Length: 173
Image 1 (tube, helix red, strand yellow):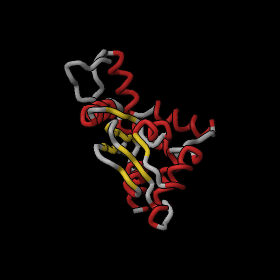
Image 2 (cartoon, rainbow, N blue to C red):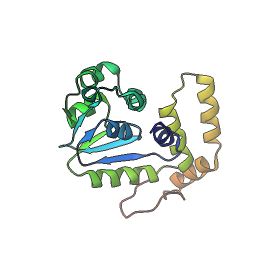
Image 3 (cartoon, rainbow, N blue to C red):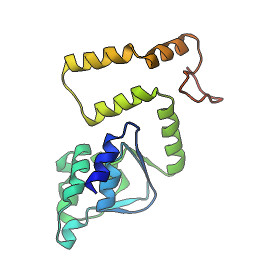
Image 4 (tube, rainbow, N blue to C red):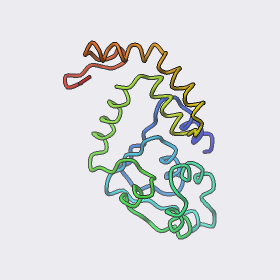
């Protein structure tokens, strides 16, 4: 399970969890290991580990990376069920909707509109934040000098989609 969580976080491509049913224990960890989490508004969650005599140890790694521990204290310690609004408030989920598929498709379209290396770099920034201005200056300069940036700026100036984007009838530059 730890390998799966690490793999989801280390992929260059963003990962999306699409959730339409109840999520318990390890399922919450799997969901939390993804970059974006879209849940149906009726979904419920629970960390049931304590009720069977164990702790949510491995799943705590991706969950605590997303959420502050104080918002998790009651659900972790009691195993009590909570709803999608509470999960969003905790930071466990990014989107609560009545139409998971449509929301996921919109997110995918948004991701695909971005330059692949820029999206990967943005994911890395989210997963491994840096407070070092010199380090971020080096990254920024490298990205601005990249072929993707040149194509993106050229496409913007020419009022056309960049080469990596799939044109759609309603796309705007």
